[in-house]
Length: 100
Image 1 (cartoon, one colour):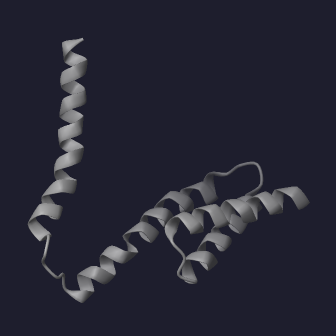
Image 2 (cartoon, rainbow, N blue to C red):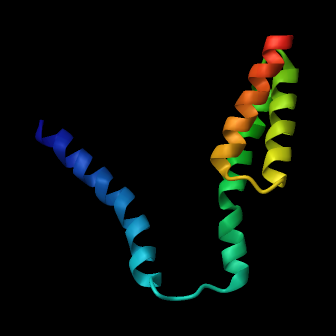
């Protein structure tokens, strides 16, 4: 039981420090516009890294992967939030599955 508590505390520290250190060290400082632009695109890059393998590994019907990816790309290109991109892509796939 003690080992489990130590593991949980260790995992909490390991996930908390990378989030807290930049917050404390960069609070009140203005980042370079290029760095701000890069950081704004990180969620979309992560979303792409999650979606692209699913497109190629979906075995039942490849069109679900293609339609979902195109929907996600269009919604993201329009400037929507990442959550809106995911939910919009799910909605498009639900409609696509209904009519298929």
